[in-house]
Image (cartoon, rainbow, N blue to C red; front, side, top):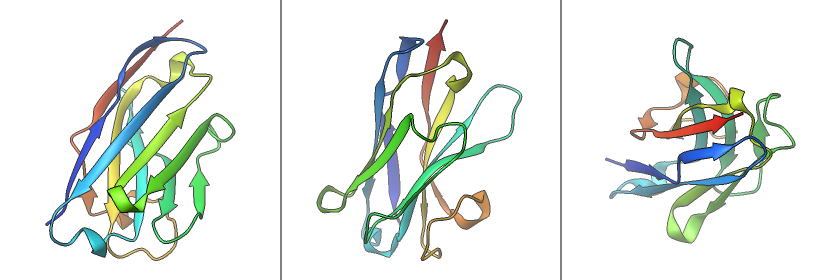
Length: 126
């Protein structure tokens, strides 16, 4: 089984930056082809933020974060990052790292992801 552990969340002011990390571990980590970030604000559905295919540089972003957030991966360290710039109060949410062992192209739908981290809180004050 594969474990995903997020880190890097916190409380920042609007306009600040944060970088989230997600470390993947486990015997079958090589079976994870796509990694993604989702977020869930209080009272809202979990929504797609960004995704990356491990084997290349293909990425995909939600419209709400495109141009402000950057997803990247360090395959050698089995770690994926989410660099978040120009943060807004509406970015406040619990951010979840996700992995897919079945998707071969980057996907935004939750149903493609079968591995999830425990989440890390990001709070942006105005």
